[in-house]
Amino acid sequence: MVYACIVSYFVYGVKFNAYPEIFRAAALNTGVVMLVCATAMALTWYLAVGQVPQLLTEFIRGITNDRLVFLFILNVLLFLVGMFIDLTPSLFLLVPILLPVARVYGLDPVHFGVIMVTNLCVGLITPPVGTVLYVTNSIAKISLGDLVKELLPMYVVLFMVVLLITYVPFLVLWLPSFL
Image (cartoon, rainbow, N blue to C red; front, side, top):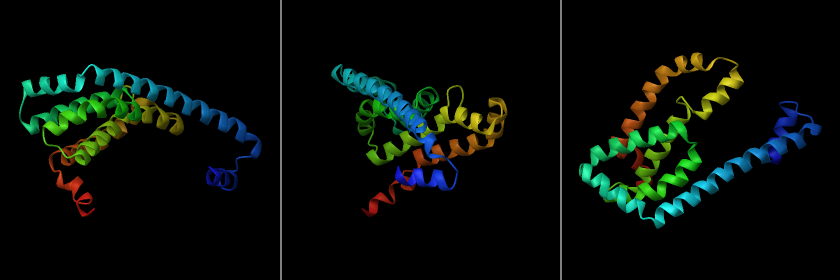
């Protein structure tokens, strides 16, 4: 925080009298995020007590026993969730539910985590609720439609990266294998 204050003062010319308002806004935004996270954690606890992970495992096993089909279902689910819910609450909500299911299909927890985070991050820049889109929109002062139009080639690249990360686990696991 001290570093950020120094940089903002010397590089961006933020005056000291602006800091109380900046700190108030930061505290308010952090409080909102933490409230959402706390709600997600309470819901996660409720779902765990209701044995939703076990029920979800049985349901998905009823659909398919194939790991590749499960990975496809996982990608679609995570992408849809990422489009509507921010990254941190999504992780708090879904990891305890989906990790046991992923283990049944033999997914490495690190691989599963990278799949989750990557999919949810792609959702952050995807309409209709992509929060990063709205931040970028307000900073760049361009319309949301123009922004999404410019991002279309990047969506193709991002989806290809998600597919590579999902279906070629070596790309994710080679570095952790050294530890």
